[in-house]
Structures are given as structure tokens and as C-alpha cells.
Length: 486
Image (cartoon, rainbow, N blue to C red; front, side, top):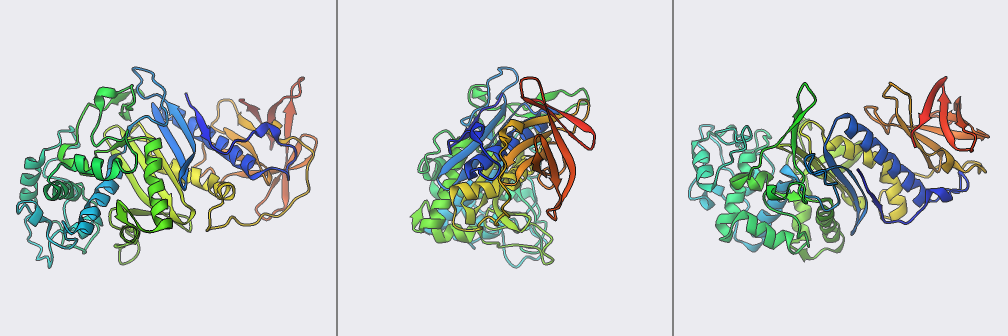
């Protein structure tokens, strides 16, 4: 089951000529290809449910849903379905912590132990400084990754008293700033700091100071398992040898909520992304000062050889080729999630899946590579202008006739053929890098095209086949015949 949402109202069926393809029509074709790719790969991996969205500036401009919230209920996933977003929760913890830093209630470089009743890891490293809000947010406090017990093994997460006892029982791994070490323990400690200083729980503080002002009214700060199949997506573990996925047991993250406890939807995460774009463009103050948010997204740590993760204050960076993306990923019991923003373009992508062994990060990167330039062209952002394309002769062909999914029976050679300014594109749905493997077909005559090489010369013929009604039903390239699925 899936439903697609695209705010630029367009119709592929109105395509008249190759060169006359409007930017909206070209974008719609690429989004259709993205849907086909997601559906094909998630079906192959037996993922129960997923949702993805693209945000531009203040709008969710496209979304796509796959599967169900629960295999038991069969309820379709929607844009409002809540998923556990796992470690993306750390962004909300970072914003909450910096909100308290701005107010003067928390000092960025003070020992966090002073806010935790003296709770601190044992140190035999000779560290020159203790764990602070600053070094915890960049994961360079030298703290262990987890608490004394692996709570993720059975989802028996501790309360605050047990967390503090665990902190006192732990030994510092490194001196701060010697090494980058991702730490769920550190983020749980920051959640405790936020609660101690604010006089309320981390959950209540995030809800009142971040979620409510942004209109993220559906988002929760722990797992609503009482709503599985009724607005909350059930997570599932890795597939067993027989292909079956076990459902993740109901659990609450308790003191680890600051590290992984938020459940949100595509619609609500779009509001979170739009807040970033607003504050970056307008300046001023909304939850945080614009200068504070920009400082959080500046790289505060990268390894000496530039071969370790580059981290801001709570915000991770990703490199998509020569472009930097800001955000965070998430992996927790039964679900995985990815949230990235291309700040100069005011574009964000979010995806959540209900399977432990399928990463949304790869899908998000592929969808961005496939659609990013087309989104920029349609929505007119200010930076990173799309490169100019060479103009070709107009074709009288209705190229929309050829659009759709094609497959070779018994092989994973499925491809989506779509239309854009170049003519036709063919996206291989199961390639390791589908966008890099994408081919361009240039119209020659009738139903005959030629593949365009990277140097713009033309290669082998690509010939489409029609049935007696005139509908395109197949395509042949290198003697391989691919049948049109729809």
C-alpha cells in the first residue's frame, strides 16, 4: 500500500514533446521513479512499513508511504503515522540543552556532574577537563558508549536513579577531545541535566519548549505502544533464516529517552525541518537564537586526519558527493530512521522504516541524488543553481507513453523509465548506486531511441514495443527484452 503527495499539481499525461518537458513534469517523473525504487527494494527486503518525505522551505512537497503500521492490523502507513525515530531524538535533546544554555541556567563548559548531584564517571586517564555539555554534544567527552549494562539487549532501560548509579560505576574511556566516541550514555546524562535544571522531566521540557511551539502536536517523547496499528508503527527485528521478522517488544526508554525516545511522523518532522530553514533565513529567535543554531551546526569536531565523523553540537554532518548535509540517523529496537537537511537549498529528507536490517540512509541519499536538482528547479531556492543542460531538437513523440516500470522475468533487472529534459531516463531499481547507473535514451525515430554516453555520443539502439492498442508493453536493449509492469 502506498500513497503519494506532491504539491506542484501536474500531469505526466500532458507531455507533448521531449524538449517541452516542464520542470514540474520532469520532477514528477523522477519522484515516480523514486517511488518505484523504494517499493521494489522494500518489497525485496520484506520491510513491513516505511514513510519518506521531502521538505522544501516551509512545505512538505512530496511524500511516499509503503506498507502497514502493523502486520497484525494491516493499517496502511500515512504521513501521520508515528515511528520511533531513535537517535534523531538527540537533536531535540541538543536544542533543549542549548535553550537552557541561552537562558543562563546551564553553562556550556561546566562539569555536568554539578547538575547531577555529583554523579560522574571514575577517571584514571588524567583528563584536564570533565564531561561537559559541549563535549557530550559532540561525542568527544571520552565517555563510554553505553551504560554498565547493555539495556538494548532486552529493552530494560533504567530510571534516573539507576542511570546515576550506572554513571558512578562507569570508568572514563578517554580524556575529552582525544577521540570521538559516540555515547548514548552521555546523551542520557544530558537528559538528566535538562530535567534537573528545569525542574521538570526531559519529556515535559521537550514537549513544552520545542514540540508545542513548532506545532509538532502528534510527536511523543516515548513509545506509544498502546497505539500500534492505530497511528504508531510496530518495529520488527532482523529476518530469521525462515524469513520471519519478530516484532519488537513494547518498551519505554525512560532515562535513555534523551538518546532515543522520540516518536514522530513525516508531517511533524517536516515542521522541524522548516523551523531550521526559517531561523537560518530570517535570523532572530524562535526557540533558539539563529546564531546558536548555526553554531550547533558548525563542525566542532573532526579527526586529525579528517577520517572520523564530523560533528557539531548534536548535529552530525554527511557528505553527499561534494555537498554537506546536516542531521542525524537513528537505529533502535525494530526501527531505523534518517533525517538530513541541505541548508543552502532549504531542502530536507526524512525516512523511517520498521525493520532493523534495512537502512533508510541509503534510500535518502539516492532520492536526493535523483530528485535534488529537479526540486531546486521547481521550487526556486537561492543557492546551488542546477547546471545548464545542452538543448536538443524537439521531438514530436509523446514520451509519457514510455513511462513506467520494466522487468525481465526471473532477474532483478527491474528499471523505471521516466521522462525529463534529456528525453528518457532509465533508473535501475536494484543497483548498488541507482542514480550513477541511470541511463539516458535519446529519441531517434518512431519507437526507436539510442542510449546517450557520458560524452554525449550515442550508443546502441533501444527499441520499444507496442500492443495492438498502441500501448507500450516492452523495451529491448542489447537483445534483452524488458516487460512493462504498468
